[in-house]
Length: 147
Image (cartoon, rainbow, N blue to C red):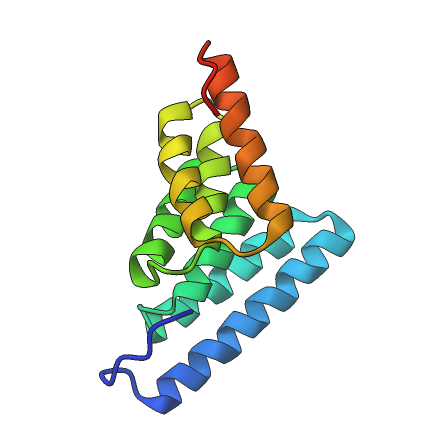
């Protein structure tokens, strides 16, 4: 899912993966203990991974999820998910999450602009169905009968 440019040495990529894994562990403990300080520590670990490997799309994706879901920082989450989708345009997950993070604060047009490409790329039936449901709800809320 993430890029492996020749300009990033194998050692830097390995260290970036290490920081990414360390960030995931912080986030795991944040979920277990419902403690936002653990999520912030995870974000700092993800930041370190990105300093080593700025094109590591998975880190932008995970950081975006944590910022949006756990820290309610939707603006930063959308920025991270946008970067992830730019680095890995055929990866479906950033489009779905970005669409959801745009939908719930009320930017329905932007949500549709993300959920539609998600449907073109997605293979997972459960999440496809959820995206289709969200699109239908947006159309219903806008007074349209198209789904």
